[in-house]
Image: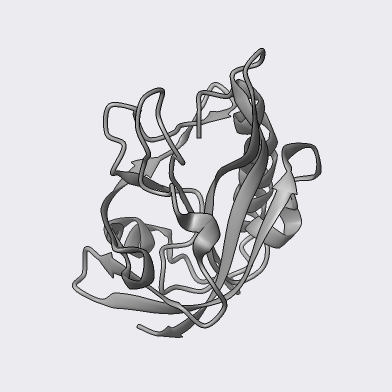
Length: 183
């Protein structure tokens, strides 16, 4: 995922939608926010791709989603405004496809197939296990924010498609959709 303020603008719309849903308390009136913030995802494992990546928290700063630093190409990031993997809701993890010089953590993400496993280790010692449902490559102009941020499951997102050398960004996003199997 080369540096792209445009990608960040598209994704931030989805994060804002998710934050609004939390603010409207879709949890049925029970305040789970303090407990939820105490548990965070710490590691992402994708056995079929050989990925074992530490996770960092990503927030929204000045209306833009933070991205993992390019200096840490093997690190992915959990959007902290999304659900904690293993909990109800949409858990969103972002990672770069490459840096200016090398492949990054989600370089082979587009090779995932339905039925493959994804595991997310949490700070409470639990491991959320997911099964891949589908993978899609979509234009950033048609980013499916509702599908990504409002439906239950794990979402892994990176850049893909052709690289625009003039704009220094990819045209598309690769999105993996996965369903929780067990925690």
